[in-house]
Image (cartoon, rainbow, N blue to C red):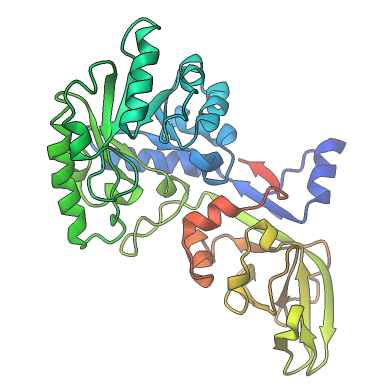
Length: 370
């Protein structure tokens, strides 16, 4: 429990005491990660992506730390995320990746947000809105360079006069295979992007998100958009993660010793082969500890690994603590994310990716920000 704040106020202590798990977010490490990525990208501006509530870590708490580290431009996915972020970053440049739904241009403008325009319908509505609000308004234009997801096509870009009523300040696209550096699709998309961006001469360009940064300077252009790498997710299998931003510790709710043959959890899918000391932890799939991690994941006490046994329940998991010191008792905590198990290794135990682990971390945790 070394990271827990020892504030003596009754409200603070009560919140801490009631929680089944504690999530610590180290904003100093987050700032260091940003500075490392910024240094890697040379003259290109390094923005920060804080969508999905700061990848699950709390955008309102972490965005100011990124701002203090040097970030001037931020990206969110939805308009509502942008509205909320504007409350804590009154002066920053904030882009909304999904643009806006029909009829919501006024909200975008009222909160000084910049839409990423993804189709001609959004372009036209933003142009029409600008026409009655003083002229062309700033926007980003996203082009589809080969992912077939968001963005304007070559045919859209060829429509004469389509962009006359807007003021592009960024042209961007997104790589489909940046996490596999040898995939030829990366170079093809880069070339496509360069050609498509020529429709907007002089406008800054952005292609690389976290993994794209590590493909090299030819992918950096004028702005990069790291997200997951900021929070300690490895950009690809060949590059280690930056500093670990999160630590997660779960409380021991109960300890018992079961005899040989005893089944554990729903379905009794695991049975003890010998007398086994078990701990039940107050964390489950409602908190982002996935059912697929049953029989694969582990938690830690210092450098000692305790494997999960039986199925993951909504609010609890069972772990074999036969190798734990006798002093371990209910109310103590075991480490889920920490020095011995980062976000990526926990994700691998469930056959998923670090992004999904981070964005699924539960709202029931007691959260502490360093």
